[in-house]
Amino acid sequence: MKTRQKQFDCPVEATLSLIGGKYKPLVLWHLKSQPLHYMELQRLIPKATPKMLSGQLHDLEDCGMINREVIPEKPPKTIYSLTAFGKSIIPVLTAMCDWGATYLNGLDIQPVCCTSQSKK
Amino acid sequence: MKTRQKQFDCPVEATLSLIGGKYKPLVLWHLKSQPLHYMELQRLIPKATPKMLSGQLHDLEDCGMINREVIPEKPPKTIYSLTAFGKSIIPVLTAMCDWGATYLNGLDIQPVCCTSQSKK
DNA sequence: AAGGGTGCTATCTTTTTTGAAAGTATCTAT
DNA sequence: ATAGATACTTTCAAAAAAGATAGCACCCTT
Image 1 (cartoon, rainbow over the protein chains, first blue to last red):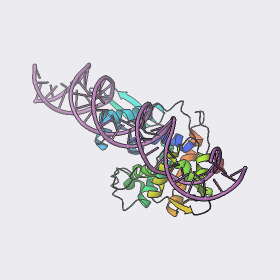
Image 2 (cartoon, chains in turn orange, green, cyan, blue):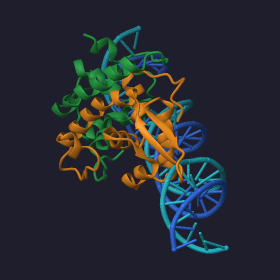
Image 3 (spheres, rainbow over the protein chains, first blue to last red):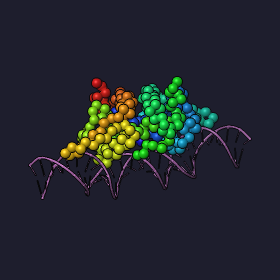
Image 4 (cartoon, chains in turn yellow, orange, purple, blue):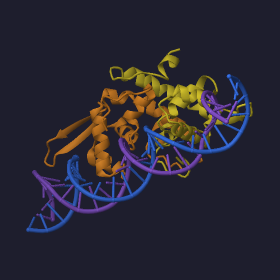
C-alpha cells in the first residue's frame, strides 16, 4: 500500500499506483460532489468490507488526495473530503469513465458511480 | 485474465480491467507510433519476463485492443499493432500520463514511455 | 443494563498477480 | 553440428491484493 519510494517506468504506472485500488475511483467519485462520512461511504460502496474501505481511505489520505477530519460530536464522526490534489485527478477519472461508458457497452456493466454524474 | 463476464461497479473499473495490467500501458504506448515485433517489445520493456509480456499481449488481443499477425518469413515473425479500439484509449492514457508527469514530480519517477513522446 | 450507531482494527484465508527459470520448435548462419 | 535468433509456453514459487469474520471503544437511547 506504500506509494512512496517506488520506481515507476512511466507516469501512467505512477498514476495507476495512486488510483488503481479496487475502490479508489469509486471513493474519489463519491467525494467529488461533497464530503462524506465514513458510514455514508460504506453505504454507497456496500461491497467494500470495512477493512478494504478504511485501507483505501488510508492510502488516499497518505498520498494527499483526501482529507480526514474527525468531528468531536456526541458520537464522533469522521469526514472525508477531496484535497486540491485529489480534485486534480477528477478530469482523468472522467476521461476513463467516459471511455468506459462509450466503448464498453454490451458488456454487463452496471454503472454505479460515473455515468449518471458525468453525463450532466 | 478473462475480461468478459465480469461485473463492474463503474466504467472506470471496467476501463482499468482492460488497461490496468502491469505492462499494458507501456505496450499500448509503444505501439502508438508503429507496429512492433515481439522481440522489439521485449527489448523496449526488459523488465517484463517473456511470460508476462506474452500474457499481457494475449489479454490485449483478447479484448480487441491489438492485432497479432504472424508473418511467415524465413524466421517467422509476429507483429503487433493497435486496432481502432486500441487507438481509442490513447487519449485516456495521455491524460493519465500528463497528470502523472505534472503532479508526481519529486517522487522517484523515471519516465520511460510517456513524457518524451507526449511532450511533442 | 442492553442494544444500537459510529468508525474503525486485527486475524486469517483465499485469490490474483507477478516473477524466475528452463524448455521447445523452427530456421539460419558459421 | 553448433550456436543464435524468434516467439513463445510450462512449471513452480513468491508476493500482493482482496475477502470473511470478529472484535473493540465510545456514546446514546430505551
